[in-house]
Amino acid sequence: MITAKPKLLELVAMKVREKHYARSTEKTYCYWAKQFILYHNKKHPLEMGKVEVEAFLSDLVVKKNVAASTQDQAFNALLFLYREVLEIPFHFLDNVVRSKRPKKLPVVMSKEEIRSLFLFIQGEHLLICKIIYGAGLRVNECLKLRIKDIDFHRHEITIRDGKGKKDRLTVLPKSTVLDLQEKIAKVKLLHEKDLDNGFGSVYLPYALDRKYPNAPYEFGWQYLFPSNNIS
Image (cartoon, rainbow, N blue to C red; front, side, top):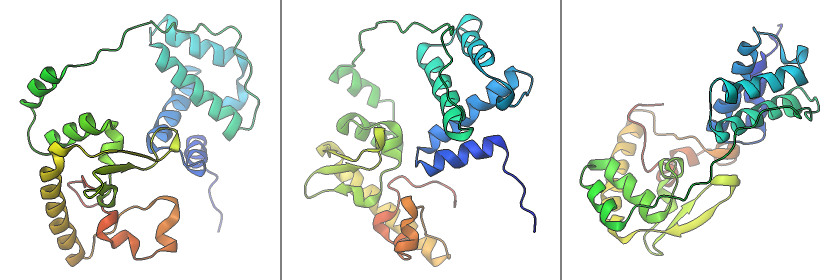
C-alpha cells in the first residue's frame, strides 16, 4: 500500500503537534504559511528565499498596514516553516520593513465599570467573565478548565499548559463559588447522560488516555464548559 506524501501545510501542522504547541498556534502558523505561498503565486517555499520573505513581510506593513504584533506573528510562522519544517537556516531579514509598536498605557477598567458591564451579560457567559476577571485567566485558559482544576477547599484554580506551556495556581473568586457548584452539577448530569448513550469520553493531553484507558470517561477530566455538541 502506497501512502501519499503529506502536503506542506500538513507537515507544518504535524511539526507543531510534535512540539506540543497550542492548537491556536497550529492554525496561525498554517495560515501565514499559506498566505506566504499565495502571495508569491503558489511557489513552493523551497523555491523562495531572502527576497521573497522580505517582500511578503514588508508588504504586510507597507500596503496592508498591519500592527507590529501581526507582523511578528507572520515572522514567527515563517521562521518555524523554514527552520523546523524545511530545516533551512532563516537569517536573511536585513531589509524587512518592521512595523513600529506604539507605546500605549494599558487601559484598566474600574470595579464600578466591571459591575456595570456584568449587568449586560447573562447565564454561562457571565460566569465565564467573572472567572476571567476574578482569577486573572485568559479566555482560552478559562474555556479549557477541567472539573478537577477547581478546588473549593483551597479556593484555588489550577491552570494547565498556560502561556509558555506552564502550569500555575490562581485564586478562586468567592463570588463564583455557588454558580460554579451549580454549573458542575449540571455538567455531571450531562456527563452521565452522555455515558448512557455510549459517549462521555474527553480529549487527554500527552497520550494519557493510553496510559490510563479509563481516564477519558472520569468526571474529573471533563471540561467545565463542555461543547453543546458531541465531538
